[in-house]
Image 1 (cartoon, rainbow, N blue to C red):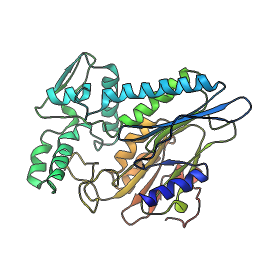
Image 2: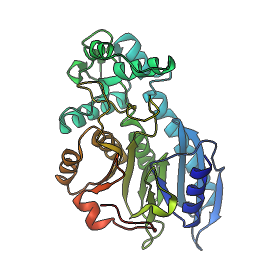
Image 3: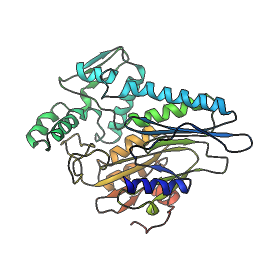
Image 4: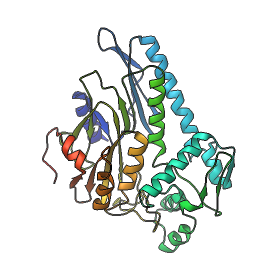
Length: 350
């Protein structure tokens, strides 16, 4: 905790945002500061989605800016109430319990459909139906052990995106015992929804950061981009890479967020074919136009080896990515190497 707080303090001293990590017990109350003669900066951090969510926006009126920020947080909480698999009152939780959901919220239908699109786009490694295996790992962790291979194989019989049927009248599982997790995409979708909401309210410059899955719009001014630190999980703050964005999103997935063994070999990002955590990377960061796409692809890159992952990213000129291997080396997509290689000290990765 002490090291992480030093990292955050260092980055704050440089006026830099962070991507890919959170600190328990840290939050900021609503704050309004004069930014220029015509604008105030309104910012607040709240504890949502098991992390800290920050919204920062610029407005000509302090009172109106505070009101819009509060409305944006309420919008996020409403979305969380739909997608949270841990809340037994949520539509997603009801679907997982019953295997069928009639008249589902359109937001849930659309996000599931977009999840299936990512499933196809990534050759099947991104699979929202991996929940039964994730549940198995979580249950065995409570008993202080990892699942037995035979138990994993048996559970995999209930995994497969082809068994998820989505429609605005009904969502249904084709096999008993199936389940859906949107952990790898919902946070980004909620961030995007907040940005769209702010745009509709007339906000031109804003940041929404959900524990490192973040999206910005408009820059801090016409010629001043947002500065975002992408950290290496095993290095100090001075070794962070800094990227600058006027528009777009960043998301990071890693083995250090939720894991099931001390070595972090087995973590919450699971391969749907064999129920294991691939050994290729400890962290994957993706830049994309939307936080939802960045979130889903960062998860997917953790499931692919570096060559496959970077090839996936390099096929789309809108995207950029950084992968960190278990040996601590960083590999970059073509666009990241060309446009985002800025360091704040430290030595170059290769």
